[in-house]
Length: 477
Image (cartoon, rainbow, N blue to C red; front, side, top):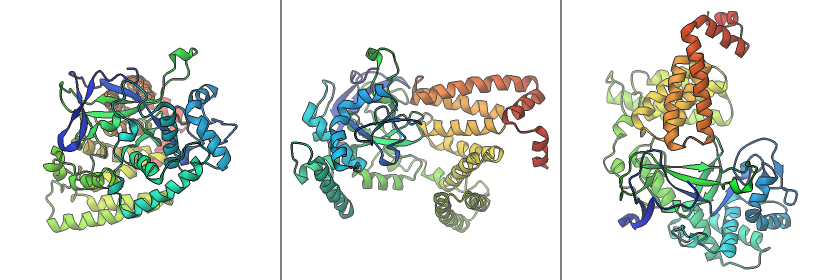
């Protein structure tokens, strides 16, 4: 679908939620409801030299802007495509010597775009950018102090432009970004690398059990003919069948939190009380805090839960310090304590399993990592929506871990499961879906070899990994 097509959605009064979007026709799972190019977007400061400032692809050997020496691009094609967005920014950075924070850069890009093209840049844009909610009056004192500093930095940065803006006008833009900015991921969907404003997307309200998801399509600048190039854009995709007239919703926060914790996060970051069915009825809260089938005492559950909370804090500190030996020591200790006390769907158990599988995979201890990943995925599948993108990504990682561990049957099955989910959430042409398709083909071929001759399969695998079979036997003793 081309960016800007809004035939499948319309604006409506969503009652106490304010404005919203609803379906104008029956939609199928995986269908693109609409696609929208960003009004403005910037790369995070921490990725400024690692991510293309046009298409937001993360890669090595990017070309740096020769003038400001801050912006980086895949090649001359991406740089040319981004020049309209970067032109004013380039001059401001050169005169300031260094670039300000991403929030200041995005606010400046928004205002430069408004001056150049006005607040509405297409016939299908349903709301002017400067008419979006800012919630400045709802900000706590600490956030207001930070915003005041950002406004001062902005005024210095913007002083190289012609038109001046009042502190109130600038604060309004900062508030809009804070409440409506959409985090942009790299081409693999694995890392948040930037933030952008998408006016129509801002009209889609939250639901903890949404019927849609949003992904970034990085666009295509590689075609020989520039007429075939496509812009960076978001795609709103249906997660399930949506009947005509039903409100379109997305999840602003991860569902894998208790309803009270999700409500708290939504209140703190988006300034509204969530009254969706899953919050008002506390759906799945019981599973997220469940005790094991062995029915331990309430006191024992309370004790282990408190221990798990404390242990997760220690795990996080060790991760930050990159002390992975300590991380795994804490994980194993915590999981042993949780055994026969917390259920497989308990959030504290799932969080420890997630860290353990991730760290062990990083250390290439795939066999142990696969065991933890399998238990984690089993819990996730009982909690998440069956087409949740985060579930699909977790299953994909678990599948790859099993594959690398030589557990080809389990690995192939998980990769196929992940592929089915990501076809819905990301579509067949997304980079991560294409990667999964390649993995699915490869594991299918290896599975066939495994079923024909297990010895031949393991010999092939050992040779590919350059690990002599005898060494594996020694390790197993």
